[in-house]
Length: 389
Image (cartoon, rainbow, N blue to C red; front, side, top):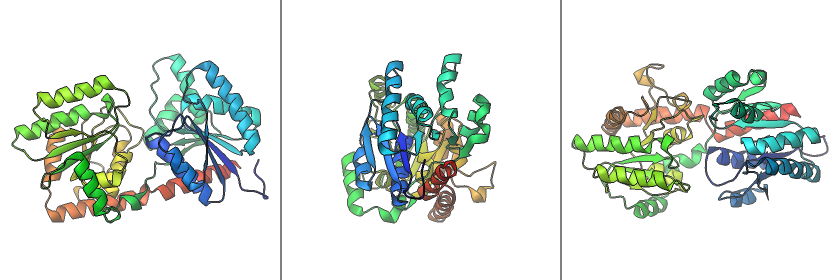
């Protein structure tokens, strides 16, 4: 356990470090730990973000923690226990279920606090899945990334109710501000995507998977085209991550509607601030509940009007009727899976005059600054660690 002679050591465990909210949060918290003078260790199978960890002064250790094989999970517990001893780890923090089982066992053996973060909405259709998921509620502290997620944990695992801390995902809001993006970055991305000046851009930043609702957005674009809009372009920026059948389905849907030059599949985007700076509207079209709404937060921080599906935790990030007055709106919420409703909202957003647009985006940026900054998230996470120590 930490003492007054040294700063604490925190070990975060996550399957990989390629892309996604959990992965980004891992790096952000590691950076905050280093800046606080603590030691930040991360175990994963590696990925795009490992270089960033090295650059901020955190240490990455590669282990096969993405595996769901029971024998590998068991062996990983022993490997993690050895790392805890070698590096005098004070807290182990798991961010996914398979590595959480290994971390839980290692923490028990080493007698150190075990922390979990519920980053997703885990399927729970049978008793086996309920048991598998339960490790995420076994932490000495359980972090939920939204009110929606916290309610889900309480329903599934009442034993965790008194251990839950709600810490929304935080974003680097300064990097997302329009003035933070250089003209060179904008030009490079616009050229790479083949965007043409004068054509409004609808941005969808999400990995390509059915529940993210890209098909709904394509159908909404078809609705706009049928109504006479021949200029607006939708950019679907996300990696299929091996979902070749889904990617083929999207391409077929685009061709069916005759939208080959209006809906662009551009793959993974590393420069989210530049992507949003090119956008006139951002869309979160999910057809299944999400545990948080990072894309919606980032759009508001970038002063871009946002439209989201009204389910899961995403609406917690966007103010609008009926919860607030029209004058307090920061975006639009639409029924999930309804392209006609999405098309109507797109038309409203695209038709805003300059005064209404400025008022909306200014409110939205202020809203996310108050509630969803990376600094707030990291400070509250470190407070959880401090309370356990």
